[in-house]
Length: 246
Length: 236
Image (cartoon, rainbow over the protein chains, first blue to last red):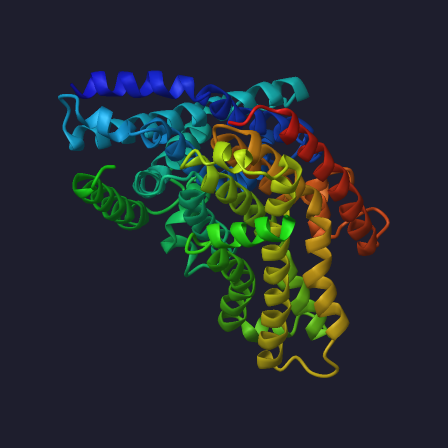
């Protein structure tokens, strides 16, 4: 049943022009990668590293956290129009499954955006003629790290998007938490414990140390990302189960 | 007619978070510096001889982005006030012209943002005094850093009010807002004609006043383009 709910969510999303939203990430990766004037060739370090690093300053710090709000708002758009929640829940589906299906679609969309973003940078780098070999392992690490770091953000945004009818209100929550991460990432005490800074910290390849699974310690992933994910996911689920529909 | 519409619009935005947001935007920008200065006061205070100016630059580094995102949120919210209850039709059915409907919405938002900018000046001044940054207090500079970005962001306000009122899907203006926010963040690499660069007060002439005049001029132009498109379209 979960699978069929997910499929119907996917159909609804296509009507909301989600494909153009998805393409924004790779477009940003390509434009920033291609227009980057830093000398990407003939340096001491791999030219790709520099491109990844520069782009993650925008993509991981601002774009990805802000887009979680847009995606979550989009996946609830149909239900907020003209009694859509009632229609959806009058079908033989449980609220738990609807919530989980919407959430799963959201994380799959972000995974897709992550892969497309790195593919776009790959194309940009080839066009610019970066001579170094493409560091696939580093790219995969950033793709998966950034992806996992958005789990709690997506859960909170789904919760807020179910709660409020307007698109702007949940987005406001997103903005209020995302902007301070520009400062948080500069702090050694606050950066690691601030959930909205994690997409950046888990994508930013400041080291080519390949011993650990991610760029941040595993405890940080488990406690901060895992902890805030549980909080927001369970909070959202409880809210949705009790929500009065009108 | 416009007076009555304005009254109605100010009643409609009650208890919907508009006033709170106007406060939060200004407070947040200074609040980030409160955190910044409390954490590393000793280091920050040694960075420049002109402690006031250095503090103002720190505050200013978030003003433009907060302003751009604030505009995105407020325009989308004011459109959803009518969207959610399908009230555009009823509003337009009243004996008012579409032109004044649009002007009233713009005026409400321009007023809210102006209040927010005034609050920004007050908060900047108060926390600056608290930090004891020395004499003389640069009153003129504080006002410049608070109201210049406001004037320079008028084209963005006009643009977003336009797309928020004509879009059926509020995801579109919000997505544009994300792009605009990134453009503001990257302002130092962008050419001068990008309107999202203007609130940062950066330009090739090194003259912030230029952005103010450009902002007012293009703000008026974009306002009229948006208004005429709003009038031309069918009511959603």
